[in-house]
Amino acid sequence: MKVSIIGSGYVGTTLAACLADLGHTVTAIDVDESVVDRINAGEAPIHEPGLADLVAEHAGNRLRATTDYAAVRDTDVTFIALPTPSRKDGSIDTSLVEMGTESLGEALREKDGEHLVVVKSTVVPGTTAERVAPVLVEASGKQLGEGIDVAMNPEFLREGHAVSDFLDPDKIVFGAEREAAFATLRELYRPLTETTDTHVVETGLNEAEIIKYANNAFLAAKISLMNELGNICKEYGIDAYEVADAIGLDDRIGSQFLNSGVGWGGSCFPKDVAALIAAADEVGYDAQLLKAAVAVNDRQPERLLSLLDDHGDVAGQRVAVLGLSFKPGTDDIRESRAIPVIQGLLDRGADVVGYDPVAADRMRERFPDITYADSAAEALRDAHGAVVVTDWDEFAALDEEFDTMARPVVVDGRHVVGRREGLTYEGLTW
Ligand SMILES: NC(=O)c1ccc[n+]([C@@H]2O[C@H](COP(=O)([O-])OP(=O)(O)OC[C@H]3O[C@@H](n4cnc5c(N)ncnc54)[C@H](O)[C@@H]3O)[C@@H](O)[C@H]2O)c1
Ligand SMILES: O=c1ccn([C@@H]2O[C@H](COP(=O)(O)OP(=O)(O)O[C@H]3O[C@H](CO)[C@@H](O)[C@H](O)[C@H]3O)[C@@H](O)[C@H]2O)c(=O)[nH]1
Image (cartoon, rainbow, N blue to C red; front, side, top):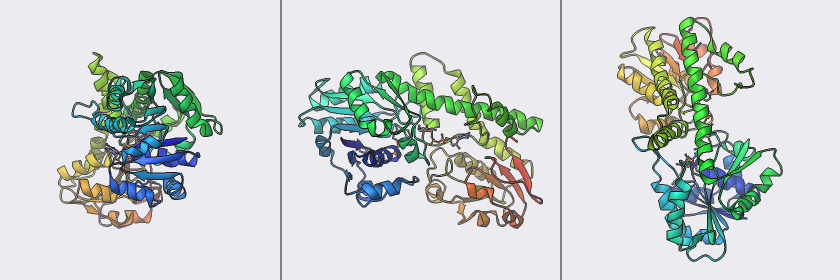
């Protein structure tokens, strides 16, 4: 099929490269010329394992990029993969999605034949039907079900595993109102559904929208619950990881997402939980448990720092922050727990030195005045303490590097560093 994708960020580029890999002809549309140029040059505009290879393989062949919305006219399906950022009150800002839809609709005015518009962005219930569809109808001059239609297909990929998650998902969710839209989506995903045992869920637009939020809210709340249990364990001197291993054996609980520590960050969990709380508020429901999940998450960075405080004042002292990205495998620092951790150390007057294998440049934009080391060893040298914020594998291999610290104290927020003689080691929940 011929597919166009509006927005070439984490989701859009992954979708574009993977659909091209599945045999479709894909046009990526983005307002950022540098993103378009990179894709056309066969480079991935973001750091994501396996993505660069796919873009390099298909660019100039089944994959091309442009800033020109007119390109949608030569395609059968358009995905909208535009950002839906948080407003101050937590609710989502759909203005980029609406602007993109308007440009898309105007371009489709001159198209003959059927066209399906699929919302890939994460949006609260009612957005596709009540915001996207009316803008599309108005801008295109066409009626739903008569030449144009809308569908909702939420994305569940994790950063750092985007390509493998997309090509081998647990489930694919199609939300639509008319059979023709479902048929197009089935056809589009057929190369994937025929070769994997993924489940396909076919449902309504609102249901597809909330399934995405329910998924993320459940996972975020699961981590917060484990963090709450972990904090209690720590007070009793109990290792929460031993407890997690045991409860994870219960199939009803499951062993995944039980890693307690400094909490959840990233571009999705914080934004999506806040959006669901705000959406619930809007319809008169007070989402107490979700609010508590956020409160527990917000508390973890300060708990980490208070464990460091227990070993002495850090004012005027060099302190290493190991890991800056919100999780390993990505250079994304959005809502990274490293941000409140660095801020907390600066508030204490510490001389902060950060290290991350890939995310330092991005953190430099946020905190230009702290020091950035080229290696964990360099960050640890002469430090009067270190905190671990991201579970990069290389931190597990650290050993003699701790001997170079002025005061060898490590507070581990991710259960990754090994205990060793001569090192004062504190686990956040163990
Ligand atoms: N990042 C993830 O892991 C992830 C996973 C699932 C769902 N989502 C959701 O997918 C959506 C997109 O997220 P993302 O992380 O890919 O965003 P992103 O910020 O990485 O990328 C968005 C892209 O859209 C482009 N853009 C902005 N306005 C445009 C316009 N009017 N026309 C064309 N291009 C435009 C930007 O230049 C950018 O390249 C969000 O709703 C997000 O919540 C994200
Ligand atoms: O046991 C765990 C698992 C994760 N995390 C943290 O939780 C955050 C999110 O991790 P992860 O879910 O792996 O990353 P994302 O790329 O943000 O993916 C989530 O958000 C995406 C965007 O909506 C969804 O598509 C994915 O399904 C969903 O897992 C990170 O800060 C992790 O460090 C923990 O603290 N403990």
